[in-house]
Image (cartoon, rainbow, N blue to C red; front, side, top):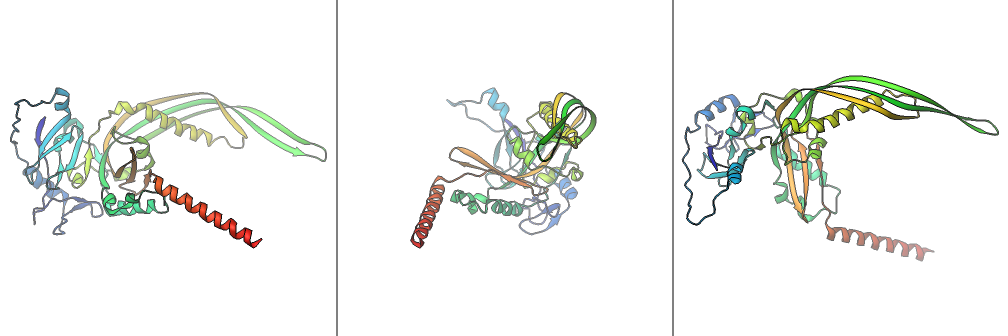
Length: 360
C-alpha cells in the first residue's frame, strides 16, 4: 500500500481544522468563528506539508500479505492533526480522519493529469440539506420510524462528485410521415378527411457542458435528476473548497460516456424537431441519421448532498444539488406501518358503512 500525506487547513488563531463555508464562500472556524481568505490559508497549508513521511512496518510472521491487486487499490495517509493512519481506496480525494474527525484532503489524488479543471463550490449548507430532506419526508406516513430520526439525518454528507462536461456539435436529418385529419358533419353523416404528408427535416446544433458523472459509485439517474447546475459559477479548482467535505476522483474515463452523451443529444434533437411539427394530427419517423462531432470533455467537481440508507437489503438514496438545492429521493415503506395504515382505513370504512346502515 502507498503511504503519503494529507493537506489540512488550520485556523491561525486556535489551530482547529477549517472547513469551507458555502454561504460565506470562505473558510470559517467552527470553534472561534473567525473567517479567513482561501488564498492566504492555501499558502500557509502548502508550506506545512512535510516533505517525507515515516514508513509503516508490517509484521510478516505467519500473516497474510496484500496481493498486488489489493496493494494497488488501497492507500494509506498520515493525519497531520493526530498522526493516525487513514486507509482509503484509490479514488478518494477528500475524507475525514476516523480518530480525530479532522477534514483530510489527499492532494496526490488531484494533481497532474487527475487535477480537475474546475469546481462549483457548495452554495447550500448541511442545515439546508437536512431541512430539505425532512420536508421531502413530510406526508409519507409509511416511512420506517428511524428514517427521519436525528441520528439518521446527521448522516447527510457533502460530496464533490467528479463530472465530465462534454462539448460537441451534432447534425440530424430525417423523414417523417404526417397526417392532418379534418372532421365535419351534416344532418345525415359525419365526414372525415385525412391528408398525408412526407416531411423532411435537417438541423445542426452545438452543445456545451453536457454532464455525465465520472464515478461508478454514483447512480447516473439520480445525478441527472438533480440537474441543472449553473456552469457560469465554475471557478478554478482549489483544494480549499474540499475542506470539510468528501470528494472522489473519477474512475470512469471520458470516452466511456460517449454512448450516454449520444443518447442525450439524440433525445434533445428529436424534441427540437418535434417542436417544428405544428398543426399535424400524427407524425411518425421513417428514417433518421444523426452525426455527433466531439470536441472535448472537461473534468470538474460538482457539489452534492447525499444520504444512503440500507433497509431490508435495499439502498435508498436522497440527493440534493449542493448549488441550487434541487433534490430527489427514493424512500422505503415500513411493512408494519403499512399494515397498520390499511387496517385503520378498513376500520374507518367499516364504521362509516355501519353508520349509514343505522341511518337507513
